[in-house]
Image (cartoon, rainbow over all chains, first blue to last red; front, side, top):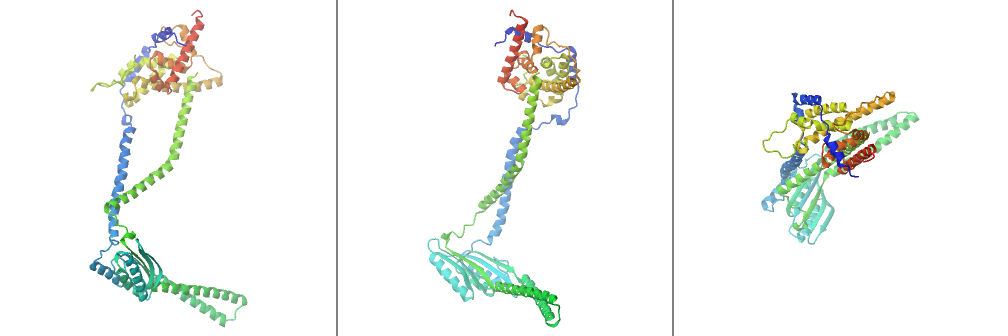
Length: 342
Length: 178
């Protein structure tokens, strides 16, 4: 159906005109001076803020990751100095030998302190040496076994692989008193790549065990004396005998613990790895740049994890808010339509 | 065309129109729109005054890049009118309950309109009169009207044709010869 042009012309020709009173009122409103509050003028330019804020946040994340990476790589440099391969020169070998020799005096280069004479301590060492070829690996492994036996120790486990990527790993135990000699001897099997000596003090726990042992012995002796000398009621005797059995059982366990601790303190454990450069046991030390990038990447990953966690927590709330807003908008629109359909 | 084309590029250094100038220019448009929407000159006058008061408060926030001043003012007028419709609906419900509904005197939609056309306009719904006012009387284009009403241009066109069809039908009934 096409509306008649007359109808449209009539509607347009009879356009409503505001009455003079209304015009005067609106003029008055429009010219009235208004003190505008500073907040009225303020409108947050969301798009502009987003355009600036998004790259700024990204840049901040990258810069902080870079800064943290740089500082951590410096810390790691100091730490890795100790594990840096020692050059295979007579002087450096002597240094290693010295450090091994100094173990007893408590002044080693790579380890914090040597075993203290007269104290029960658990001494363990990890040693990696590099030799030139596969034959040298076999020879070094055999030398290590010979040295261990010569020092009064024994081999706990041993694995030797020959061929292109020849390597030998073994765990040996030697008397604590000979650990310095053992480390010195094993260090001399090749070029030292890394060395770590760990000492755990067992004396405190040993003392506690021995005090408990003395206490138990006294209690056992007292109860034994009462059972032998006193005339006791059968019930009381039964109670004392049960208690005596329990104390004797505990005493036996305690003795076993003390013996084991003494045994642990007598022998030190050395884990030795002998490898050729081709075996890839020794990874080349990463450069400062690689370390920085590595650390920065770690920080970025953590930043990502935090952002993801926040998104997981906030997303349902945001979705609920969005759904509520859309629902309210839809309701309002329907309500408007209903009002305008009358 | 009554629109103040603030969205068209202004020469550098040209001053933005003052609120008073815009109000003077667009007063008839706002009043006409509200009169068509409410069918009541007294209400239309009140709502027009309220529209310009609201507009003055928000004038500093008006951004010509986002639309013409006319569309902006008509959107404020529509919001004021819808508020009035809501209040009126509540009032009518209360009065229906009290069975004391009063009949309002009927207003004219403009000087020179035939009684048949006035009658036809009154028979339309507020939504139909609204689209008629915007598209025919104020001559807004389909896109601008659609944006203002929050509907698609096709829906606007459909509603306009329905309104004009109803008017034609009403006029024919008054004048069977035509």
